[in-house]
Amino acid sequence: MKAMILKKLGNLHDNKTPLELTDFPAPQPGNKELLIEVSVCGVCHTELDEIEGRTPPPELPLILGHQVVGTVNKTGEQATRYHSGDRVGVAWIYSACGSCTFCESGRENLCPEFQATGRDQNGGYAEFMTVPERFAYRIPDCFSDSRAAPLLCAGAIGYRSLKLTGLENGMHLGLTGFGASGHLVLKMVSYRYPDSEIHVFARNPKERGFAMELGAAWAGDTTDESPRKLDAIIDTTPVWRPVVEALKNLKPGGRLVINAIRKEDRDKNHLLTLDYPEHLWMEKEIKSVANICRRDVTEFLALAAEMRMQPEVEEYPLEEANKALYELKTGKIRGAKVLII
Ligand SMILES: [Zn+2]
Ligand SMILES: [Zn+2]
Image 1 (cartoon, rainbow, N blue to C red):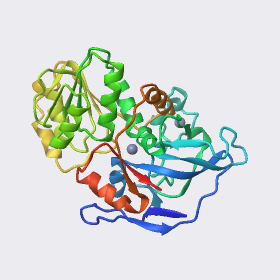
Image 2: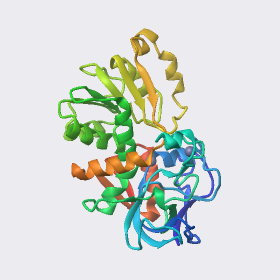
Image 3: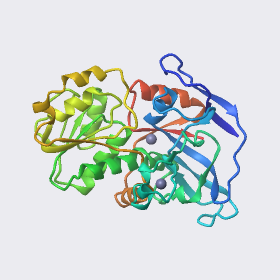
Image 4: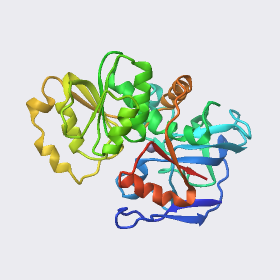
């Protein structure tokens, strides 16, 4: 099968083509697994973290990609949930043990045996992939394959971050960073919390313009002070400056939710500008988002279908995965990038 594979880790600025188009052996489904013929796979910032070694795959070569939409091609002997031809999706959670205290309390995202799609197991930058059937999702009919793909990570993790903010209607939310996840969170908040204002912080004027087009109350630079203090802010940036800058814009008791699997170290020194009374005192909180639970994905897909959410997508052929990743790295973002297999 055709696949874009990762053979060696390294910085994208040093090697702009980390993935190689290869003819790779197609996988076979295990007992309770599905073989999926991939139609579309979303491109996520986490892939940069993998390629650049911040969350390195345990084994190489590897097929990246964890926002997968395709059809069931074959089912394992004991797989009963889906049939050949069913349209399904796969998200970042590839599997969890199912029996630890985290799994049993609905926090399988924290399971010590958590495995990630396209990191711990091969993902969707290929014509086929396998997945345990319990970790596949039906895709509501109202979404095309391309528009469904970014819902599986950017959207679902955005949904989880929004849940973790504790936002209620009328409370005001900030978004620092405005990529794939941010724009979907903005749409969710406008729908669910119509009396809540959304303030967007982004370096790139185009992203700020995009946020205003989508209904943000205000958009400014990462370091700007928002016109009002905010109840919660979600950070989707890969760096540290926005973390410190966001804290100054929180209300007393406000919460910053960091939606990132890893942060880069390049501006870590900025943390030294943290001023306790300005940034943290008054019971401000910082919470991170870790991975994703199946429940987040199913709840979010239902919500997205109900509100007829149509994410903005930019399509690339599979062979141009390196280009899509490089553009993501260099901040050329409008909506979500997807690969057409
Ligand atoms: Zn992702
Ligand atoms: Zn577990």
